[in-house]
Amino acid sequence: PMKPIIVNRKPCKCPKCGGKVVPIVYGMPAPELYEKAQRKEVVLGGCCNTEDGDPQWACIECEQQFLKK
Image (cartoon, rainbow, N blue to C red; front, side, top):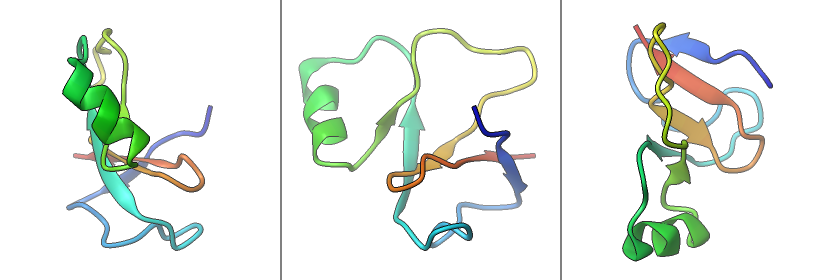
């Protein structure tokens, strides 16, 4: 997997490919969240969190992730 890019705020568009950047949602998703993921409004991040902090946003085109520090 790619290392997340550290940012100060959510990018308007992906600096790598120009794609749309959307929130990453963690935890067990409800059916509505699956629908949002299918519409590419969010990215599902899984149920486990890391000690270092998890990326908050991802590009829906190239899957690059972004971490606010």
